[in-house]
View 1 (tube, rainbow, N blue to C red):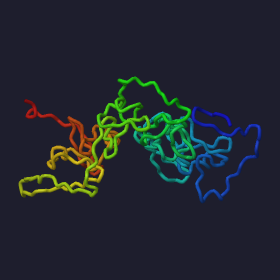
View 2 (cartoon, rainbow, N blue to C red):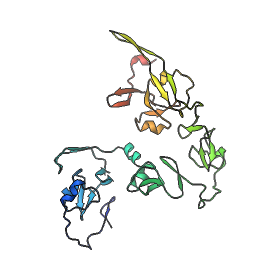
View 3 (cartoon, rainbow, N blue to C red):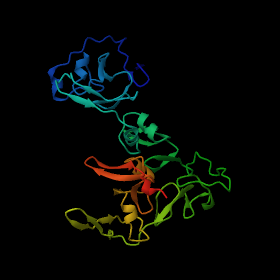
View 4 (tube, one colour):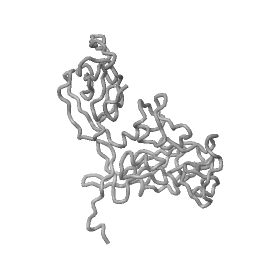
Length: 312
C-alpha cells in the first residue's frame, strides 16, 4: 500500500499494471462507495461527490476521511455546501459534522473503521474488531474514559502515589484517602462510588432512591391569566428508579429552566446545549444567565435579557 495523503492509503497498482477495470450494470443494485472497484470518478459518485476513482478504487477526496461506505467527512471544517449536479440527477445537501457528533462517533463500543475517531474522543483507545475499545493495559470506566489497569500483571502492583494525593472519580488510588469524594471507595485501584450510589459528575456520588418503582412527582400548579381567559396547568414528571430523590417536592424553581430529559453527568446536558448542566435532582437545566426556550426545533438555552427592573 502507498500513502496518498495524511488520511488515505491505497493498494499499489503501479507494479501490477492491471487492465482497465470496466464497471458493468451488475453494480447498479448496490451503489459503489468507499473501497469499491471503479474506472472513472462518476462510478463512485452515485451518493456523494466527495469520492474519486484513484488507481481503480473509490477513495475520499484529499482532506476528507471516510465515515462509512457512502460518507466522507471534511476534516478542514469548511462551510456547508449544496451539491446540485449529481450523477443520479438528484439534489443533495452536505452538512458539516460538529464536534459533538465527532465525539459521539468515537464512544467506546461504537462501530469504527479506523482509530481516528476513537482516539479523538477517548485517549488510550483504538479501533479493534470494528469497535472502539480501550488499548491493551487499559480498562473502560465509562463510554468516554479508558483507565490504566492497575491489576494487570505487566503493571507494577506497588504504584507510587503520595498519601495526600487526591483523585476524582475514575482516578487512581491506593486507599480511600486518595479519593477526593468523601463517599467514594478505592475499588481495583480506581476511585468509584460505593454500592447504592451513582456518579453525578467527576466528584459527586448520590444515593440511589430506596424505592425501585418509578415515582410520579407533581409540580405546583401554575395559574396563567390572559385577556380572555384564565386557566391552570399541572405538569407531571416521571422520575426513573436510579434518579436522585429531591429533598423537596417543590421543584418549580428548577423545573422552569429544565429540559425534558434526565441526566447523570454534565456532559450529557452539554451535548444538547453548551449552556446547560446537570443538577443534583437529575435534570438538565440552563446555566445562570440563560433561560429555556421551547420551539418546533426543540429546547434551547438562550441568553436572558436583563431589564432595568431586574437590577437593585
